[in-house]
Image: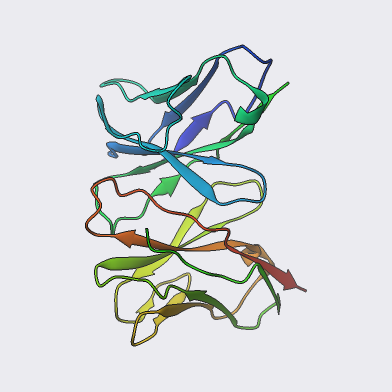
Length: 115
Length: 112
C-alpha cells in the first residue's frame, strides 16, 4: 500500500508566479490535511479537507492560498502570486477517518523556494 | 489550545534507552497525548498516543503521569536511525477539525 504521495518534491518559483502542490492520500483515506513548516520550526496547520469539502481552513492565509480535494484526483494546494515569505516545506497528511485519536500519515513534503 | 513544553535537544548513546519528556500542565480531561517524529528532510511519522494509561507499541512506550500534566516517550534501545525531532502534541476530542498543534519539538542526537 503506497504511502501519501506529494509532488513535486521541490518547486522553484519566481515572485508573482503560481505554485501548485499536489497530494495523493493513502488508498482508502478520504481526509486530507495540509501543513506548512518554516526552517527550524514545527508544522503549522493550514487546512483540513474531505472529498469535495473544505472542513476547516482556519490556518490558511486569507489571500492567495486555496485548497481543494476533488471527487477524483489528488488534493491541490494552490498559491497565487507567490512571495519570498511563502518559501517553506508544505506537508500533506491523510487519515482514513476523522477523529482526535486517529494518526495522520504524512507525505514527504514539497519544498517551495521563491526567488 | 493546550500547549506542550519540551527540551530543545537531547543526546543519547546508541543502544541505550532514551527518555524524552513533555510537560503539558494545562491539559484537559479529553486531550489525547500524541507523539510524532520527523527524520531529517522527511515528513513526520506517527510514534504513539495515549490518554491516561501507559502505552506500548513496536516503536516506543509512552508513560503518562498520574495527574496527566507530563508524559515521557521512551525509546528502549536507540539506534542511529532514531535521530530525529520528536514532537509531543495534544489533540482535543472536542475539536471537530482534528488538526495537530505542533510545538518546536526535541531534537534527539544519537552518538555512536
